[in-house]
Structures are given as C-alpha cells and as structure tokens.
Amino acid sequence: MIDDVCALLVHDNSVHVTQLALVLVALGIKCREAATFSAVMEELNSVRVPQVVFTDTLYADGDWKDVVHLAQGARQATNVVVVSRLEDVRLYLDIIDFGAFDFITPPYRESDVSHLMRCVARNAASRRKDQGRMLPRLATAAAAAPRLECA
Image (cartoon, rainbow, N blue to C red; front, side, top):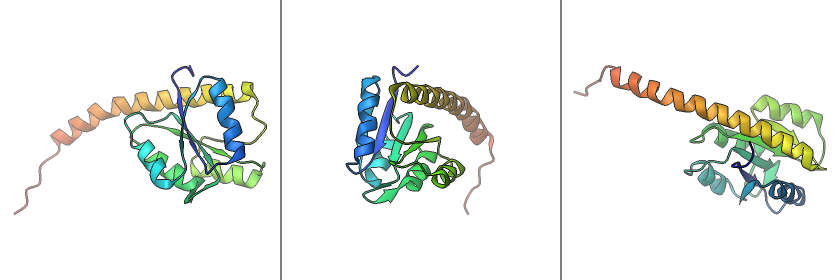
C-alpha cells in the first residue's frame, strides 16, 4: 500500500524532520522537500500531488496552519501530518481540530511510521477515488445549469 506513496516534507533544515525523512526513505517512500510557502503551493498544485505532507510547526515563511489551508485546496486529496520535536497535547488537539490528519513527534520508530503511512495512503486513495466520482457529476450539473447571458 505504501509502495507508490509520495511525501512532501515542509521544513527549514529542521533536525527532527530530517530524522523523519531518513525513516521514510528507509521505508521506500519517495520524498520531496519544500522550505517556503510558495514552494509548498507549487507542490500542491503540481500534476503529482503527494499523498501526505509532513510539516514542521514553523518554517521559513509560514506555519502548519498555512500548510493545512493549502492542502485543503490541493488539486488532489492530500493529508497533513504535523511534525513537532516536543509532545504537546494542546497543540495536538488544535492540529486535529484544524483539519490535519495527525501529529507526530520523535522518536520515529519504523513500525510506527509505516503504520501511519499505510493509514495516510489508504485515506488519500479513498478521498481521491471519491473526487474522481464527483468530477463527472459536477461536469453534468454544470452542463445542465441554465446559462446567464449578459446584456
């Protein structure tokens, strides 16, 4: 399930995100990186949108909330997992309430990251399948909608 999964890592040379990247690569996950808001936006509007975005709580010109907002408007469904170097229950609750998929802190055990990636991949695949079903319905509805002419 995680063979063809792509992850985007959003951080500004963060040691704890780099440690996570090493585990992802060991699991065979294709990883791309972005350090700025514009780079994240470019990745999420690309032809191959990653199934998961791991974002540090803060990066060069943004924070995890910016990434969640961008992911919600991505071309294809993607999940955001916020990466923090410290456990913080209040932050965790804010992150989940705001719409992120999950929250992860070190140590990054391969078995835990593998489980998380299977969940992320399954969820993204399901949501993308649903998006694919909605597109023909939206196109049909748009074609059937009355045209308004400007005078």
